[in-house]
Structure formats: structure tokens, C-alpha cells
Length: 231
View (cartoon, rainbow, N blue to C red):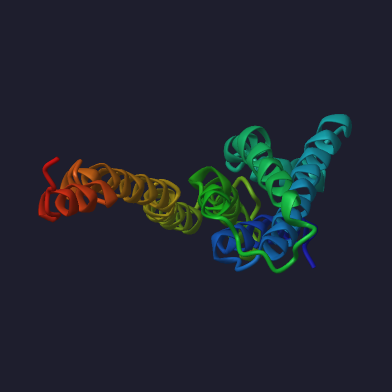
């Protein structure tokens, strides 16, 4: 089998698997499940970044055209989103993993709304899926038997479809994150409204009863109705 194809398929599978698992992070039911899934995504992301760095380092130190050089040329396109993953996505995944660590003592605890909204942030799943889709043109070129640098129409079509898919996924992730972020504010506003209503009712109760309510009013009436004895 073509060594270029083996290398590109392995790296593409790592990125695509990480992106698919990150897609389902907000759907985890318990904090323990979210913590495990976040750790898996972190491990796959670190492995994919390490594989790309190893290929680039091998291409730099070897002389002459080698398989590592051809694979490195195929990884030029996903290099930019991979840098975004290394700078932003990994940091957010680590924060999410650390946030779920507070619930390790209660494995069945449901995922809090704030953590669920953090898991749905577009900067987690979208960059991972962008890198996975950006590896497809070079993978398709290697699978069809051409070199990774050959300019043909098929990689261009794959790249165009991948770009449209990235735009669609970005919009969908942004809408989902904004919808989940509303739930982190809505319960707080509802409770504050309820406390305000209760406070207003507590202020109105003395006004309804009046100052003459209670035993003082009864004593005044009894004294007015009782017969008076003149000396």
C-alpha cells in the first residue's frame, strides 16, 4: 500500500474521530460521562498534533524527497486550523475537564447548564472538524494514486465541499451554544423575579390588615361596648 496514503489516512482518522466525539460533548447526561469524553477528545487531539509535528520534523531533518516530505506537503492546508486547535481548543478542553473534576465524588450528577454550554462552545468542535476536513483533499489525492502536490480537479472539489461543511457547522454550533448559554441565565432571572414578587407581597400584607388589626382592635371594641359605671 502507498505509504503516503497510510500516513494521511492515520492522521485524518485521528482528527475526524476527535471532531466527531467533540460534537457529542454537550449531549452527555452526567458530569462523569462528560469528563471521560473530554479526556478522550484531549487524548486524540494530542495524538493528532504529535503526529503532525513528527511528520514535519522528519521532513525537515531528512535529505531528498521522502514519504515524510510528501505527507508534510499534504498537511500544509490543515496546518492553520491545527494551530488554532493547539492554542485555543486544547485550553478550553482542559478547562472543561477541570470543571467536571468537581463532581468526581458524585458520578451520577447531571451536567450543570454552565458546563454544558462550555462544552458546546464553537471553539471546541469546529476547529477539530476543520482540521479533519482539511486533510481530505490530500488523502483523496493519495488514494487515487497521484502525488500529494498534483493539481487536479478532484481535490479542489473536495476542498470546496469541506469549506461549505465548515461554514454550516460553525453556524450550527454558534446557534446551539447561544441556546444553551441562555439556560445559565434564565433560572437566575426567574428566581430573582420570584423573590421580588414575594417581597412585594410581604410589604402589602400589613397594609391590608391595617394598624388596628389583631388584639388591639378587639380590646378597643370590647371597651366601647362594655357598660360604663358612673361613680
